[in-house]
Length: 129
Image (cartoon, rainbow, N blue to C red):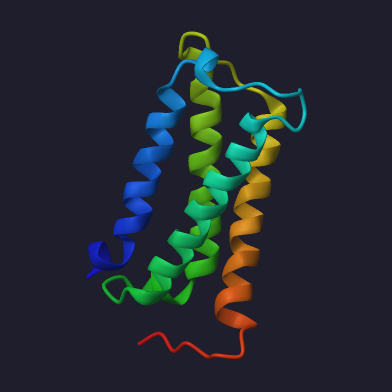
């Protein structure tokens, strides 16, 4: 049942990995700090963190992941974002950037806030069984 509830997380993490492999020249550049690239970093890691927390919360194969879904979701998202950002330094035409890392981590935090908005602060209570 783990795969069933975490399929979107797995597929999305593969999409992120494939995007990281794209040469840097193919990304549109608008400005320096708030370019399309930075917004993309924010968005993809927001979605990843949200999918991961929801998937961990709903699955019941691993009780520790279910109990601490938010902690593990945040931790794994941050580690994945960090590894991918540092790994860009070995990809041709790509480089590691402190601003990219900041937007990656901001995306993870935004994903957590999105989870809170959808599942914790909504008027419709969703029960995980």
